[in-house]
Length: 336
Image (cartoon, rainbow, N blue to C red; front, side, top):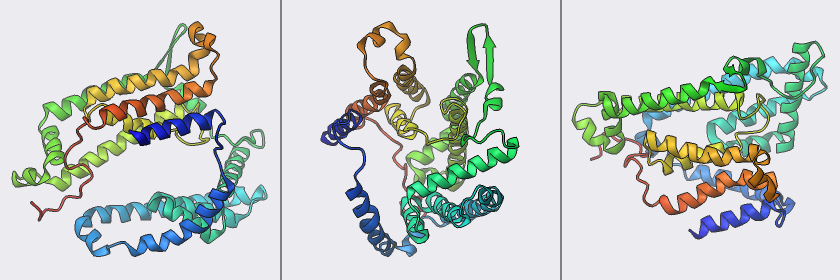
């Protein structure tokens, strides 16, 4: 509870300008000294034998994904190399960006920092290289008419909008409702859902009944990954205003809060998502509501509300929230 209160206070003070949001001394010490020293120490702590024993098959899948990520970055580098060089960019920087992003997707922040140190790049270099690359793509595609750094999907967005007078209906709303119904029926009314939940609660008991735990977990991961990809697609076409600038603006954190608040149950999660959506929408429409507009609060306050609400709710409900017992635990067929 104390940590939640400290985070809330830091968030409020940072947004109000009471405390700085960046510190040169901190950045120099952490990224210049601590992280480079921590990387080899973290690698020395890895027990490869234990990792291979507990996650042999998962490690194989991860390696396949890592190879695919590296190949994708390599192809992207050769595709963008020409347009990037034509705008005066340093091709070596583009190669460094490809290495850093590949390392980040494969091994997280540790690999990202290692690749950045290896190529002598900083975060500003990554942003600059990405901006120039996108500008080169837009310039080449438009014959010089579009020199912006936005990746626009406006035409694609219009395909999913249905207009009825002054009312706009997004097909994604219907898709979300259909996915909710399907997920509830599959999880609670089908044999597959029963087996999937059993593998999440007690995989050893499920295995003793002849259920292939590995297959069920692969299926669950594939389905959840597909739904996450669909969510990212919806975000890029709607909330992100059809551009690829920036990141998901904290939606990943809110998604975790929604899952915990919703007790890992589809209907509860839908209700929690609507609850947080109300706070999120207030940041966009507060000036059109007389009561909220009269308060004179800046937009940043309303942008903070979903995160403040999630922290407060999690502080009181996280202890009562019950996740599947085997969540995040690698399945070892020999353990009982």
